[in-house]
Image 1 (cartoon, rainbow, N blue to C red):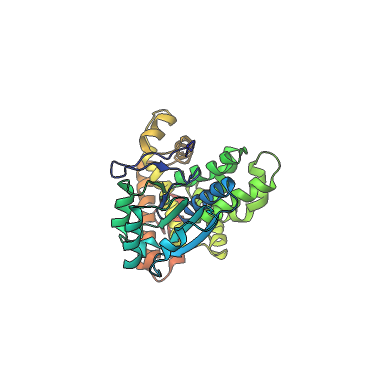
Image 2 (image 1 turned 90 degrees about the vertical axis):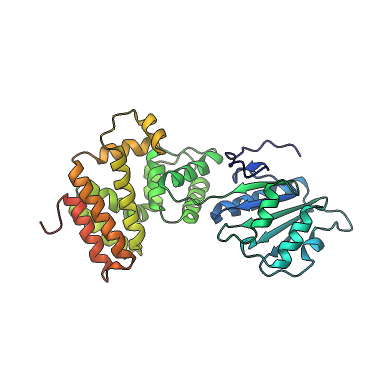
Length: 345
């Protein structure tokens, strides 16, 4: 089958099979969908289904669970039917597969059924099934792999959201994209849904005003808004933003993480006069992150930045169980950062 898919960056030499982007999946006798990011994995699996269904609407779809597997099921659902319809078999829970599934899947690799596409979902949460994954990656069964790594860093979320609009051929202003990512910094699934809502609902370009209209309340109380307000030295506004965030259900742990992340970026950028693009490339950041960090650094010095980082580290330990009062820990951290002075001084 001819392939025109955009391919993800190749993995290290441990995999001998094609690596496909989850944004442009294509079928093969065996499709390994690996990695913990469920929203990307769901898109990849749906993309394989849509590809096959577009080729033949009579596609038969079967679902199996590798952890609750009845012996003989894989062969039964992949075997040709009376009328020879193509078959898609979606297997979940490979990271906790039973011995029966593991043995039958390994055997299946040696003789995949004609007209059948078997999609194996392995989250990487355990090493269970590693023998099967190694066999697939060695080329047994004529497979492909679609990696879905965790989206954790700010730059990863930014790339994810930008890709959503790029795929839809819809323009979004950089400031609007930053606001949207900040509003959903803690949940990639919600970020994906927000992107799709804007793509579907907004007839023209997506501006910062549009994002504010749709998700203004969420933006105002996001962890990154709390961080931005404190770092800019607006003490009163920072405390208000913190209380709004907590009142709307924000978890103290990601709130501290957002603050710490911005402070770490500031520390990495501080004192460096390289052009933004070059520095961003060297540090693994985006140009806009370097520009933003440089703006954030106005009024800061080495001593105040070090004190703020220490305050964030202390708050991180306290909100993770080191203190009985997580709210006080947050307020003390915000006070140190916003006033750029020791607490109580």
